[in-house]
Image (cartoon, rainbow, N blue to C red):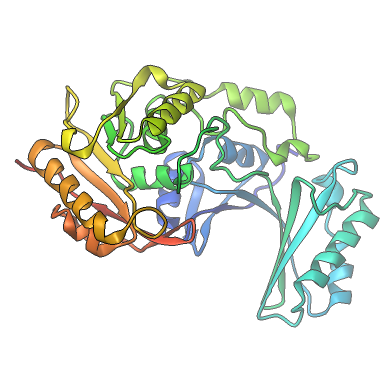
Amino acid sequence: MTNAAPFEIFLMAPPGLESALADEARAKGFADPKPVPGGVITQGGWLDIWRANLTLRGAGRVLARIAEFRAQHLAQLDKRARRVPWAEVLRPDIPVRVEATCRKSKIYHSGAAAQRIATAIAEELGAPIADNAALTIKARIDNDVVTISIDTSGESLHKRGHKEAVARAPMRETLAALFLYQCGYDGHEPVLDPMCGSGTFVIEAAEIAANLAPGRARSFAFEDLETFDAKAWQTLRASTTPTVPTARFYGSDRDPGAIRMSQANAERAGVANWTEFAQRTISTLTPPEGPPGLVIVNPPYGARIGNKGQLTALYAALGQTLLTRFSGWRVGLITSEPGLAKATRLPFVPTGAPVDNGGIRVTLYRTGVLSS
């Protein structure tokens, strides 16, 4: 099946960052990626599915769309679901679960729809159906059109496989990578995060610079599909060649526990040789030796961590430090509060749409190169 005809692949993205993910997919050679609400559509085969899971930093999941048909009632759904060539994709010995959503359709009960599709799979293929199965079939019924996809990722792709220690209110790696790309980061300049938490931005930046595939240390749901070819997969994994970065990557935090977490996570990710973490307050922050680069920071917003009234002074101090000491650097700052961003007095360019970060709408504020 690795040479099957191209089909539609859906790359899930945080709403508001679809275009950023499309840019990444385009840069990595995926066919004509088109941003749509909630993600990016491209075309490809199973090798492209594997490569997307292995190499794309901004995708949350990779869905393989294997069937599409019209159905206006449950009996019709049952009949047409049985015509899907399940045996070409699924294995009869691997449990699956089915999730369904219904929108503007005569079939409106998602639970009943999922049950009909699950029954079709069980009776036509013989695969066991289990609510806790790692392999998920997703059915979307929209305006009476049924689209059936397989979640080929399994666990969300932000789980890179190396972060065991996590700070409070962590940022997902997929979101961090897309924010780095939006700041113009391409792996050839230093990156500094002065409130590094568990080190997400620093580690993502170092991995990008080292050409390390984000999925290199984990497994995927597609490995349990009939279409999986272990030898071809190993060849694909081996085709990514790491490089030694020309820049270094820095994280600091006033919390010594955060520094220990970041160092441990960097060790597990294999980027400790190019990263430096130090306990430091904003008032003692200075640029590292060498050329300027990007400061990127995800400070407390006050929504879950900190008090908004007290945070104004923190943001003002951060802005003052960057304006007076970081000439030649660019800044990316993520916050849910426009007033806090304004308190930095940094010369931000116009912002994009807010993005969901763990249930909080946040915005990336960017500057050009700071002048003295």
